Length: 230
Image (cartoon, rainbow, N blue to C red):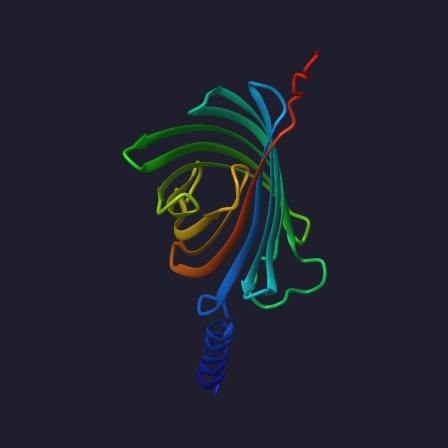
């Protein structure tokens, strides 16, 4: 009788684990805004908002707010020191009230840009110091390195193609964090604004997520213009 009871408990536990959805079979969406606000010849302010859902505009996953100070070494080299605040629902199914985790993040990055023919390349190297707090109040500090490679190709004066791959390496165990592979089509509204719509494959160890991405990139120039004295 004890053996039968034990087997039943094991079966029920296994069934419960299998029944918990991760959202891998759902098509989620990331809605994003990125801004570069030029305030001086060598300096600009980075602004960013990303809203992420497990499903198409339903079942909240993450809100990411990020800003930073950019130093423009040249037209093709930029160094950044920044800060991010992130709220994450780590479960696909709705968690109990107040169980979302929060993160304060400091990051340093270096961007290099170059062109080969019509192809534009951007390399981004980023280090992150992550201060995490889970829904139960426990805290943790983690460190991470990221490498991002983006390639763009103009179709004409307005339309372009974009693709990137980004790998995340933890500076503690486990070493592999995630990999993001992305492809999109973009439209250049003017010299300051472009929009992109694309598809992202987000790979973690043992899991993969499919995400649509809708993004707007808006650059502004807040430098004072010299006025004509005549």
